[in-house]
Image (cartoon, rainbow, N blue to C red; front, top):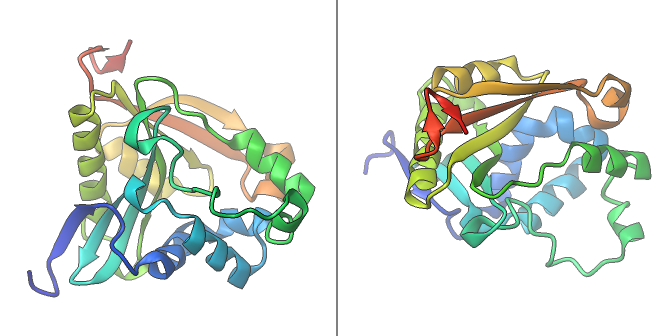
Length: 212
């Protein structure tokens, strides 16, 4: 494989946690900053918390240029991208990483628990230098393949109102809007004022492009 070739792989390679944290922070820093305001602590927290086997990644040679986290209610993706079972610290210490108790409440309010039959996209990030090369489309294509292989009925995700470019990508590859939520009173705590939920029907239960 040449250095310019982009390879899509399942699972975060060994030794890539810090690189993944920087990539994820680059994509979601504006949203994460409200609840995890301390940059260095945030990066360290992300690097430790990633569940490496619940990801799909894009690699240029050994360089990580794209990443998707996956979550489900059961099976190999249960628990999602973040695995905090490694951290035995009490809750008040975790608040040292998070901004405030109000920020925690904001995150809980917008958290998603995958339903049975649903594969959840737990964040997608492509490095700034690699955008416009179809990497996001290829990552989402691999996610859809995983969903079909594992018998899921839908792939679902949320996109914040501050990220219209991502929503346009999801629409191009076939995701449909299912719900729009407003969090305008929580913007100061979570960094965005609304969320659009989208889904892609992939299982036998889909009829006419809609999941039933």
